[in-house]
Every structure is written in structure tokens, then in C-alpha cells.
Length: 177
View 1: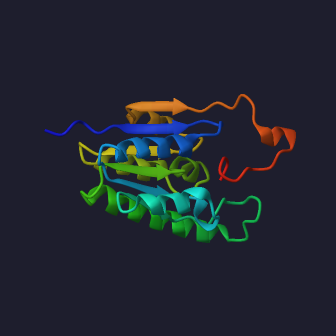
View 2 (view 1 turned 180 degrees about the vertical axis):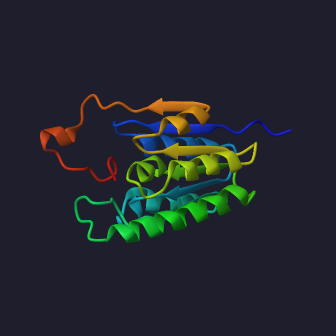
């Protein structure tokens, strides 16, 4: 008999939510578990995990769906494009959750996508409720809604104490992206 799968939420304003999910993925791979990570939001930028995941394929599958961060920095995409891609990401999530191919599915930045209004809280609740009993489902991103927290088995809130950005230090390759 398989163990019960958890719903895990990494949220909060501090750094480390995606990093925690990737650490969990690395641990799961050590036990020959298959892991899928679907990234909302981050899709258009290049960041280190895109390259490192290639070393862990096919046990770790990464699908970057977003068009980049919404409404900040160099975002030139119309909001409708972000919304359309977020809806596509939900379809991909359903497919991966129901595929019976994975032991762990990570929905990276999904809480942020809800907060930005790209997807609805009800869509995330549906994903949680449709997960197979033995699947571990990880949701990351700041601003996790209370309804999602209530359904979770484990919730960790990252709290910023100090960050180099506040001192004018730019993002560091290999640490921040």
C-alpha cells in the first residue's frame, strides 16, 4: 500500500520557496521518485534550474509555462497573454497530476498566479482535490490563499529578515536565479 501523499505549500515574502521545492525534488529523486515541476510566471527568463534539470532528466521533468514576471521589470506582454498562458498551465497541471507518471508534482509560483488574478483560487482547489491519494503536491509562491492553506498538510512561510537587494546588490547568478 502506498503512503498518503501530502499537499505542501511554501509561501511568504521571503526568498526560498522555489529553492525549498527543488530541495524536496532532489530528496525525492534520491528515493527513485519521479518528479514534475510546472512553473507559472518564470517562463521567459533564463535561470539556473533550466540547465541543472537537464542533468536530472528523465526523473525530473520541468515545464516552464509562463511569459515571465507580470507587470514588472521588462514585461512587455499584454495581460491577456499572461492569462491565456496561465490557463494553459492549469491544463498541463491537470494532465501531469492525472498521468500516474509522477510521485511528486510541484506547481511553482501558482500562489502568485492566483494573487495576480491570472487564475482563480477555485482552480487551485480543484487541482488539490483531484490529486491521486499517493501523489505529493507542492505549491509555491507568495500570498497563498487561506482556502489553499486549509487544504494543505504542510505549510511553511518564508519570512524575509535581511536581503542583499535592500543594500542595492543585484541578483546573483547561481543564488538568485
